[in-house]
Length: 230
Ligand SMILES: O=C(O)COP(=O)(O)O
Ligand SMILES: [Mg+2]
Image (cartoon, rainbow, N blue to C red; front, side, top):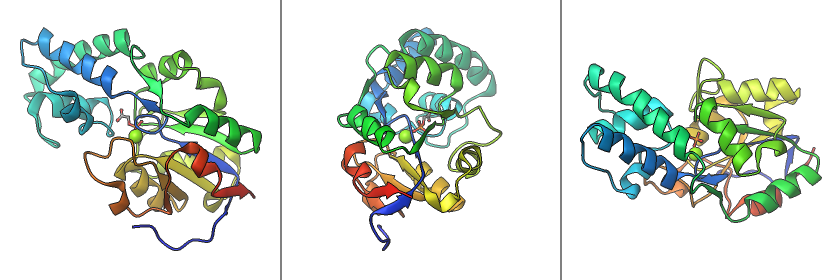
């Protein structure tokens, strides 16, 4: 559901989600999950299934992979054994296949040239976020990078967004989040900032048009055309 706001939005800071928005990471996440399952002597999961598990951080991704349920709780001993195995495997394949989505580099260039403050806000753990952004050439676009374990809370909690607005010294209603999932929409609404979603990401298999957003945009270039420097 897109509510009625006046475009172009007057914006000073743009904060952008990583998985499913900046980078197509599902192949590497699926590769790490299936290597973990193989190490545990368990059958693999299809990439499409794994894609529906992405968005709530690494612990949730592992639990969903082990149980086959969105909010299942695996045996605690199995989870304790599986987590380091997953992390070792994801360290090895973190940027094997991951690539920027179409329009991401051009969009970041346009946003940077327009003078917006730029941050990346992701639920991915920092040990994976930083090498991935460096390996894909996106790291230096951002003045601030908040990972899932940088602060005490991750999206859909508003804390990372409120932290970014304070870091940039901008009013929360002069900040825009561009994401791909309900975690982004909910975090933005709770924080009070604007939010666009792209349709090509990972929203647990759900249509982003059903989310409470200010716009659904084809890509980051289209997003840059709906805002102006406040
Ligand atoms: O759940 C994750 O690890 C990543 O999620 P995000 O980059 O879409 O916030
Ligand atoms: Mg995402």
